[in-house]
Length: 545
Ligand code: NAD
Image 1 (tube, helix red, strand yellow):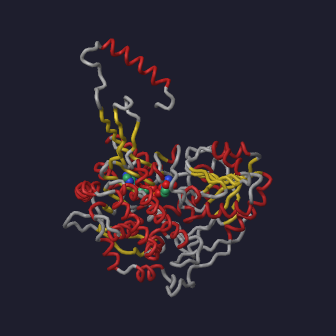
Image 2: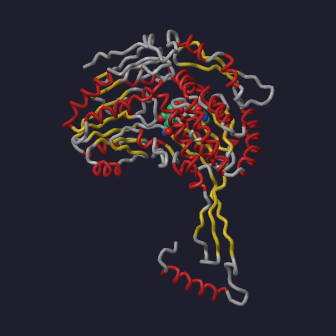
Image 3: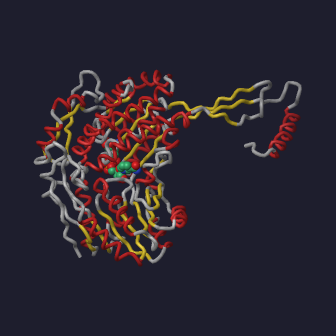
């Protein structure tokens, strides 16, 4: 069965007095005149005298937005030299001063949000509402680390080797230069929020935005300049990952990578060769479970947001839904109807709920997964079509049923607006099928019984589990770690993990009165006996580590 969608085309609505999209190119040209692009381009780090250019694509039009300066491997080395010098001075600045920069960024990003929304939309193609999630996320993370850095980074007194005689303190020293390699799907959020804890911890940062979303990366750097960050502390290096990835890894003391599992493995291999740490935020094939006692309205609403946010180009979006037999038909009917009535369009206004895919290669993957599923017997309950009449990379929010393991959509990450529904007989089957993946990023459970939800969460192999929410509850809980198990990554962002990974723990111990060795008048054998007795005594003292 195919339900006919009723979409709005992006041609006529208005956002205040802003003219909307008659042609993306004219809108882009109006929104981003060449002098504005040139100002942002000047924030890219290139060695003096260099003038290589790269084209800035927009998913909305074949005509590019313009060009910016492209960094080369030599520029990476140049940026690292500047960054190292700036970092030494930055690390000496009191933590309070470093944190203030983040608070100023918080205010600036909220005040200047319409610029950010325009850029994110023009570069990624997503709807304005989804672009706003990135502005909110950047503000939330700025405020969080500005306010909590002292708690995470404060030196901590530890139990000394010998009570009273050894005074031991753990410190958190900045690593030096942190590299951030970011994807295109959340260009503001993924481009900067991982850099903020690195900066507040006293590091310098080299950021390589995805080539698809360079301007957003440059724009946020200019905002940090305004917020008072020393300019040489943060460098934006526009270019392709295949050109700049290795040179960046050669220079940095830690690399935070967000992107595909395939590239993540390459990064991990290279980081291992250099013996530098890395964190990897990778792909997912995230599952939602709708139990027999779920609130159906809430579950359908959650599924719509979880499956189609940023047209499904969200690492924590939901691509599989396991629904209890007793609710399956009703849930399916409601979800298909809701998906079909989403307002799909492209334009710099708040009208459209779902925007465009980012590129022809994303469109090809989405199309391939849907066509392969249909050819092998899947049923399209909603969507299923490319909509070039709305935008060249626009694809309808798509709900599939009867998906089987031989179909690509079953276990491969689509990273697009496509979800598969599966009926399950009971809780145990739902858990087993949700866990039947190499990935382990996000999961969602809908139930009216919170204790039951928590019990199921404990059995799910996923870094985040949202109960009665799709993804936002865990994502926005920035005091708690966020990241994946298995093929979904290594390490975490957010919370104390998200800042301590950018530090080298250093233990400083002061020995008083006597060294930890036999006194001159005692034989080693007697000393060993004495120490053995002392260890037995320590064993009996409760609370001693
Ligand atoms: P990708 O791995 O192709 O690209 C991501 C970044 O890596 C880009 O900046 C790219 O230029 C760079 N890159 C590419 N090849 C490189 C190389 N050889 N060396 C160094 N850098 C290189 O990823 P993509 O397909 O563009 O992004 C989508 C993927 O990212 C999806 O799988 C999605 O799930 C994942 N993702 C994960 C998270 C998360 O937090 N777990 C967030 C967003 C996206």
